[in-house]
Image (cartoon, rainbow, N blue to C red; front, side, top):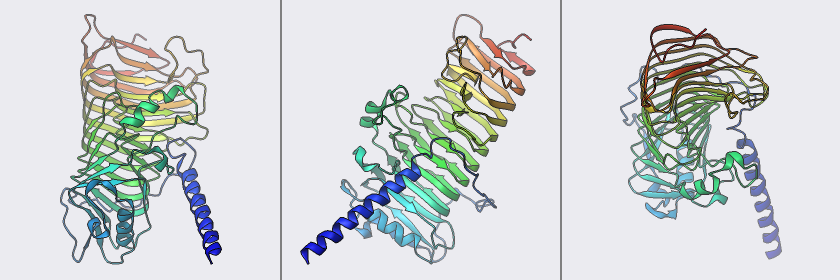
Length: 435
């Protein structure tokens, strides 16, 4: 009998290891731009609803993690308690919500998986602070908190998600130049994968190991009133990272981090970013594009009524030289205020290749329909408008309207244009590129 028990135990361990490995392989390429179809969006279930108001639906049950032996002491591992509470909510045919009351909850990597039986969108209300494990071996899934295969999900605050990333940053600070297996992208704090009709509102994300929020393969997602914080020297801690997703709205957020405040790579369509404050950080970024074969187009991106303070970049589109074809079109940056931004307006189709000395083959990514209007503020650099397009695929239909940027240097700001002939309208400072 004892021998039989050992055999069964070994089989269970092998099965669990195989399952974890399969999940890891499935998730490991989400951040990389691999070809795949766009998600199907359908009608947005949140249109016309007061999203700022969180109230219980008639008959909605509250599933409290404390009832599943979670301890809010910041030390006890609450992973199993959270998972059991989630399964109770997800499997309930009656409307139910998951509630995390005030306190500190220590958890490792978790899957919040659907599909769920709830008749309407499920709410996860976090009033406490959720702390990530600092043990790298616990992130074989590649991310920290993964929400997947869910139709209708609201993750709302005012609680905090603390990635406790300081120790991992030190180990990965030079990963861009280190190809070793030990130097890999760090886990995102929150990932939405294959989520349709999602809302993230009112939460605070601090010290993420990698990206704070990562939206991929998803549709009809809204991110509102978020507070995102990490040191300005924390590597690859993008505030919100988007890939392979459609119909994304980001509004009324404050992002202070060590990388892009919002980054968008291939397959992203119909994105509106409105009233977002960024800085420190690397600004609003499209790309890098053209790194992988058969990338999906980026299309219909609008960044409106935003401000940046002390950022490395302002608004930027970046593509790889000497790689693969791709495209980005219908991009609008409008009513942007910049305060001491190093590189306010950038199109860089020689990404990570030194300007004027890049001897790689030109980028094959086609950029068109780019409108930059009503941008004002100050820059710490001499070149305030830097448009370096591909000689193989010159930029088309680039328009600059009412640009008023002043340099903090003793000299006047300048423009640089390669393989592009912008249309200039209204006031222009720096002076337009000569034709």
